[in-house]
Image (cartoon, rainbow, N blue to C red; front, side):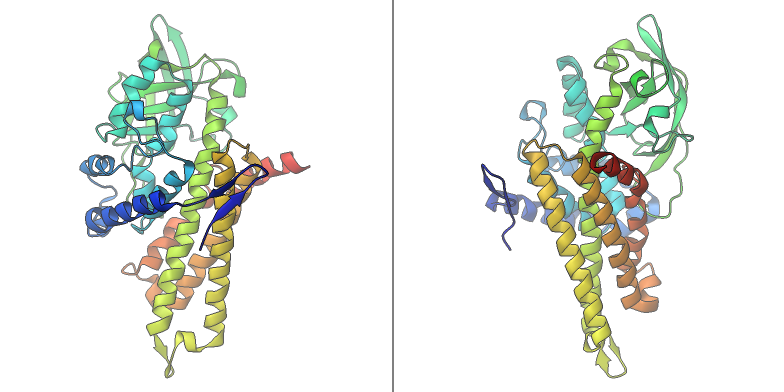
Length: 387
């Protein structure tokens, strides 16, 4: 099927032969380097650091980033391809862990000095260092403007006190892009600063045990008079909130793609199972109720995917999509909620067993409507823009 996006001045094909070549390369990587081990990594609650280097070698980590920092420049649909093919691992946790750089590095590139970019970005794109984003706090959740972690200047350093929670890659990150309060209350008192894991006063909890996303380590980070050089501040003091908000647009797009792929994988598994599973002398596809259920699943996945692609194309064209990407995320998550539920239902008792992919997809799906801004927060954003 040809995916196109039209504006008054252009006609852009979503995926070209070059995108397809990247897709094939990544699919081969997943089959060889990930799928044979993903069950083990799920049980272990993480994957080996060497996987970052292997992923970098095939261009996964650098896709969409500037060549001068070791990246591979390309339009937004190369990044879409990367997310979709990584999701074929069947593990949202693996995708989130390997991709934590995609929410940690963009603020450095958009707000950092040339020296900061050269220092922090190339090692991550090369798979030599791991970067994470630290914004959420135990008492704050989605209310970013209310964060309480403070950074007080003391000579050539900031002294940071507070904590962060639900931080993906926290236990393995070499440095984090961290939101801190350097000014007064509200959004205008927030800054972003890069904190290195070995800094005095920096510590990390044990891995948090989650319902899903088992292959990504998630933990809390603590700052106890943590001293960080002033030179690690990104941009001007008290200007970090805008960097955080700009980051959310691409994060929500990525989560939309993850939700669509979660639904698609669940639908594919349900189709395969329904064709071979026999009940009362017929396959499950021999019953109209199951055929229609599968049709509804396929229709929802197709509609949600097309909507997400359209939003991605507009973002790639530089068109503001804060409202639309919030809509796309909510819609994709609602579709994934239904499709993963129905897939487990088609499998019956077998869908409740951890040996089947649909069981993991069902668990992993639940975080998607929470991460990157909850469904309710998305609705508030949308309401402010349409009312």
